[in-house]
View (cartoon, rainbow, N blue to C red):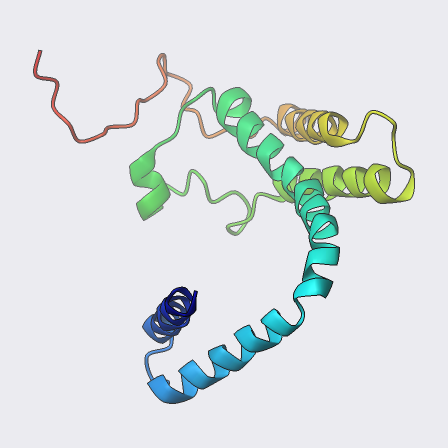
Length: 169
């Protein structure tokens, strides 16, 4: 048990130092160690609230999944340009100053719907599927109304992701 915690402390310290390289190792280890000791002392409180935490995370992540699925399969018909995602030279995924406003509108409406029907007025069936559907329909509707899509008009088949492996058949 002790060796596991020592390795977790060591790993988190090195991860922190990889991002913030000018920090001192000993000071960083002490601060992270104190934080983890406080977390251990609060374990009963954390366990009592863990289920609520999971419910909140689920409520807020359902719209994200809906947006990703609708954007990939319905809006862009399974097409994406990996070089453009990395380089951004053609600005296909740039939208409005780097922000796809329609995804934010859809997310906040979907997350608000999910929050309301999870915490304020609980539905007997739950709000998961309805939140997914509301977010999907709002996003799909906004995209259809505005005609925003990055799929080129002359594309026939969705582009496959290259794995880098050669077919040896």
